[in-house]
Image 1 (cartoon, rainbow, N blue to C red):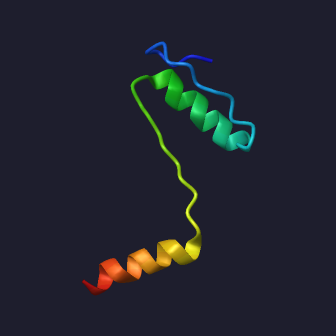
Image 2: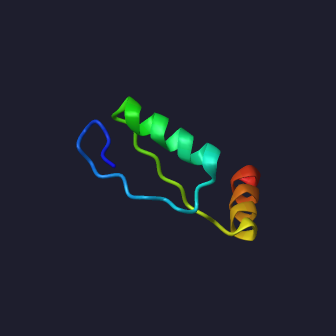
Length: 54
């Protein structure tokens, strides 16, 4: 699958059906890049607490 800019979009088999539909709509719209990172909750919470306290 390619987005409208000709960039190959790799298959993402871990997406559920609604996420797959969202990906197809986004790539059809063109020019949108998404990044998703999975961070451990304790690490994220520590970072949020540190940011909130400064």
